[in-house]
Image 1 (cartoon, one colour):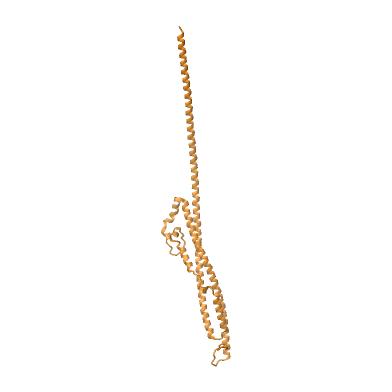
Image 2 (cartoon, rainbow, N blue to C red; image 1 turned 135 degrees about the vertical axis):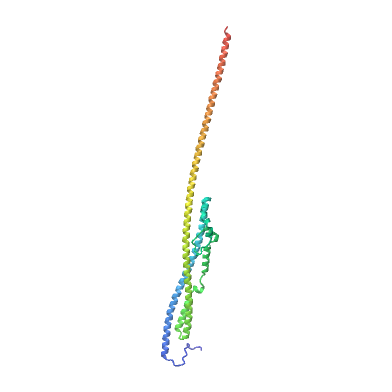
Amino acid sequence: MEGRGPYRIYDPGGGTEENGSTAFERLIEENARLKERMQGIKSIGELLEESQVEASKLRQKAEDLVKDNKMLIASSALEELVETGAAGPKHSSALAAPGSTQPDTGTQKSPSGSSSEFEVVAAEAQGCPQDSGRASIVQELEPLPHEDANLLPQLQQLESTLSGCAREASKDQVFVRMGYMASELKRLASKVHKNEQRTSFLQTLCETLHTENKELRTKLERDLEQRNQALEKLRCENQELRRMVTLSNQESAKREAAEQQQQSGVVVEKAAGRGELEAKEKKVKILEHQRREVRMRMRLRLRRSP
């Protein structure tokens, strides 16, 4: 068998050159159709690679959006805690009243699965179930297998089978190769369909995450505005209290100054009265001394007179 040429189709007889030429033309037409199909397979492979790249981008985007959602929820909880701590007991009770009136509705999940309610207390109590659900969904989106990631070898293999069909003269071998190519095409089409489903699912996930991010940002902006209003109100109240304290201090200082002036006036009056009394007492003593001297002189004169 070695050294011989390629196998030829066994013809028991009765065949003519016309039948051989028609079979050859038919094979040429089939080869042309197979080449067209190969071009379609190449385009399908390129589309599959593009869909895989897009799916990886969307997966990365979904993971980034999940991280952003976690950070936004944590920052909203921190800002609400800071707001309640700065507002004092009255403001904290006033702010906690709307959330405490409906504790059951915040902890229950909505039947439609929507994440429109973003209560911080419910998020802390449940451990962010929406984030865990999204994380599980992202974990379910595992990377594609190695054979799906690298489609170029499969396309090259199909191209080699097509070139073999073009060179093959046996119809049986051509049909076998065509069946193999049909199975490969079916498998590639199923992979393309799966990748399209994954990309559509990732697109919907990204859209939902984008809407949730918008809602969280609006909620954070609203909470920040409320906190700024509460801080401004507290600042005004503090200024009013300071003004009242300064006024009361000024009034008490004026009262103390008036009392001190009154006390000093009383002391001065007492000192002046004491000085007048002492002067009068001295005058009385002098007058008594003078009266005694006058009496003594009168007595002496009476004694000297006969």
